Length: 236
Image (cartoon, rainbow, N blue to C red; front, side, top):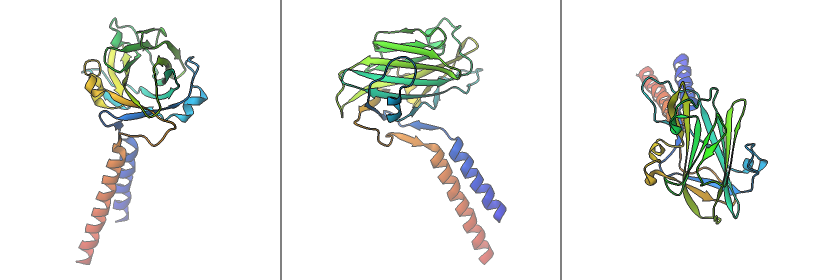
């Protein structure tokens, strides 16, 4: 009996820590007040902003293995601009494919699919006029990208945006990373865009579903059910 309880509870813990976490469609994320120097180094001001993890894997390619690339970003704003800081962990950067979307890179879209700036990891360059300043900086873990986007912000208002990481290896893109799987279509569909709220200070994340918690709770309930059944059988 004790072995059974330990086994089921262990399963619950494994599921709760390994399951993917991603946002609901059209989620709302928060930017907090602050100004940053656009140099590819995360300023202390970003510590006040919530970490937005990009754990939804999309655009997988048959025959190509999904690698272990991880990415998160943080957002600040002041009266004149929005600052995005993206941190990517990628052990092998690749830009050998001629297609820009098949290079290790970040795509940021503001308001609609056509307002795009793309920053490339290997040569630390960028294309697009959405951002007034962009800095790409390779690190010992991968690369950082920092964007400054001129924008007339107002506390309490929102804007539409999307962020995408292109993950490349061996001459082609293996997959992309987003906050939710719907964003794989952001290049052609404005309806999947997410919302950025200009907040006064960070509050708990909105629009986030933790499947680790769902699975873990489900496993724990299963454990209770098994224990209950065992108890009933013994009493009979």
